[in-house]
Every structure is written in structure tokens, then in C-alpha cells.
Length: 74
Image (cartoon, rainbow, N blue to C red; front, side, top):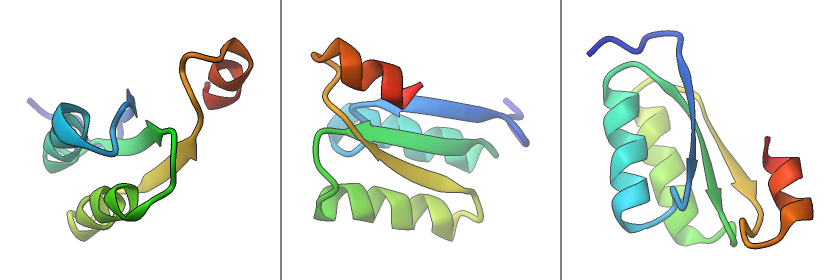
């Protein structure tokens, strides 16, 4: 799968399965935006791993249970 120059938004991308998906997509060439409720060490670790793969990564702090915050994510 070739995803060079594609972008993905991963909600729940700072931990667990979401983080693994974000890293896997980055390994296939995708630039990533990860969303989580906190900009904590877990989010920074995922971001740093993606950047080490020579991909762009942004952390977006928002709670997907809040419609007003979901609009800000997109």
C-alpha cells in the first residue's frame, strides 16, 4: 500500500490501537494528524515516532464526545 502524500486523521491516535494505526500509516508514507483528549507524553511519543519516519505529524487535542470540539478537529 503506497500512501505517499496522503493525509490521515486518527481519532484516539495517542494510545493503543489508534497509535499503532497512526504509526503503520506513517510507515506507508502517510502524513498524520492524531487526536486525543490530552497532549501528554503518550501523544508526544507517537508524534516523535511518526516524525522519525520522516512524516509530518500534528497533535490535535479535542474530545470527540463534544460536537463543538469535533468541528475544530476537522
